[in-house]
Image (cartoon, rainbow, N blue to C red; front, side, top):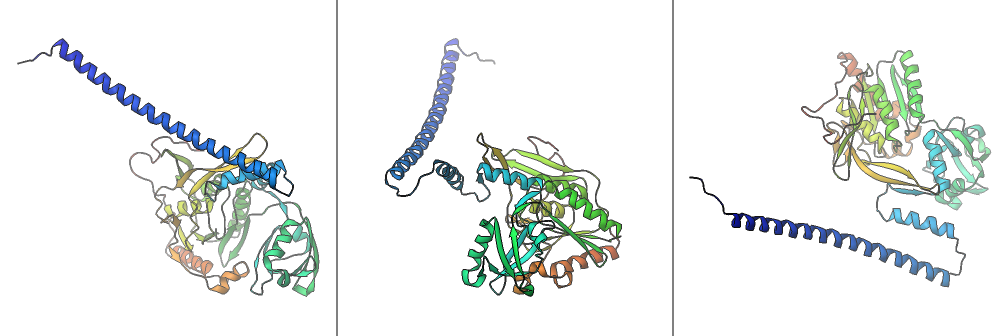
Length: 416
């Protein structure tokens, strides 16, 4: 038997529902308003504090106050306050230099150094065509004097600061007591080095910029002409660089896969880059260590997803993506905008990429890392052993691990 609801009861129910909706809307609106007001109040307190500091400095500080330096200091301090080591403020001058570096040019001496066991400055790498190379400095040189003073007397850090801050510097190297004058200038960066180890190709990538892909392809072509049976890609001490540049190289060697998946702060996932079906038809092994960071970690993780073996040590743990934003005055901000992942991420454990074979280097090997021959480098020798075994057993190209069912990126899916 059907029961009918009276008009009066229906109207009463509608009024109750409307009242509840209005109350809910009001509550949400008030919470939003209070949240915004709180944010405005907090920002106002920040501005008030800055104004108070500024007034006190201009009234009491005995030194010179330069508005430009104060302005840049405020901008840098704001970004530092985020507590994110990968975010940065660039002055207009620094931004010009950074964009040049990203495009494959740099201004400086063109050397990579570290503290020698003696306390002097050890030259680990000299960029071909750089001022240091033109002056005659070579890998393995020990710098004992800087600007007429011994490195041991002034201290390693002070000596390095002089070399970094001076446009021109005089040095003495241990080799034959040679005296050299180094003058900073522009030079083309070289991020790829290659050689053969027995019949296996070896390519070291120190960082990723706009010219790295072309350098990698050139090295790979020359190695393939030498009929190498496999390839070692060394990403140890690679601090990263542009993710897009790393993906360009990954696309060359990996089978069809989602190389890079990003997740923004709202949880939206995007397949940022895919690899096509063309892959390198030889065994590959990738070397990593504690200084492998960012784009190099993405490279290693995607390679592991595709069955490529990793050798070395756990990586740095830079799993976020930064974007650069140029400001109206020519300065720029580098901000973390998302995190990255790969299809399965099977090599990622507790926020770092872990190798299939973890080999700890001795203190001597760590101190002389850049000077080790291939035969004295346990990581390279382990990679050789892995590749030789794959060749002997009949190499089968890896297949990327794809997830079943719907795509990983449910919100958006853009492939460049």
